[in-house]
Length: 493
Image (cartoon, rainbow, N blue to C red; front, side, top):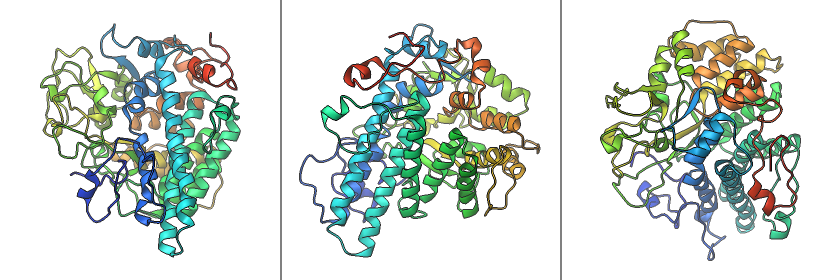
């Protein structure tokens, strides 16, 4: 097995003696309906494991996710074929409304994560009351912290997508959920901060098992949330703490940041894992995010996917014109050419470009006939982004007592130097441009354009309507379920 899976599978019996023990898994993201023994410390991680697994489920990490989080960007095109993916095309052209199925699915997905995290958080006091040993109590506290990071991540995305949303912070009755009004954006940001601050207090700097969300994951996520809140001091302070720890660094080669070998590596702060467990079929904790973006109609079948969310010509031109050739070679797979791993993308594929950041070598694509990208971990936060957050916060006026001693120029140029670009001065515009290049195809571009006030100009040619499309509409399905919700202004219900 290529990596530890304790953090990404829901397990029926948690035995930490060997990696092989984690093969005994339940249905993804499920919890036992009865029989949980709260007196056993080895059971503490079970509900947290289910919360991790809920992040990876295909309902939220495949077609729906790329359609909502990526395709509206100017650097991402719908892909596939002209007639395929009608609702994805609506998101590409900003003609979607509150009945769009992808938008509804993302609402459900992130609230499912919230629900799983709430269950885990509420389980911790039941364990805690049975323990007196300091080590066991620390385990309970840390697991509760992980669940709060997961909940904060889910709510951050809900706020980015929808603005004001209902806050569900505990198990609620059907009656409560059926008449729950949204909490303001600022109120939700306060709640996310609270979750992350409490997690930072109790999480260790690292876990023995790779991929579990630790203290620095929480700090990195808080720095990113603060960026969207324009809370420059918090953004800088939390990014600075990650930098000053000395525990993270950029991969020497840009490709390594997205390779199977680079998973849970020194650049990784937050990932969603995917693994075929060394099998060719059967049950495995898979994330279909990469597969959905694989080259359509390519051969052999192990080197093909659905071909959605592809790099736009605009992105290719941008990287080319700035001489960003290493990023271009990794980010953009061109039909008629080989991938960085030596596999051919046929000239007959329908799209000129495909997302290279989710590419996996044919030698690893053995799970099924169509297995492209199934061994690819989804990167959520990389150290490169932490450096850019730090630089942007300083340029925007953050005043902190820096533990790292790094300047905005140094942080920005560390990211540039990794891909062979010369040093530049850190300005708002140079950092925004670097984020675009460094994080291309990683599903932040649309939200960056909105938060920086550029969306109305940059996305006008795609159909973006200022004052409307900064947020997605609260789905009609959800308004029927919850009478406390309100219709999003500017959309036709």
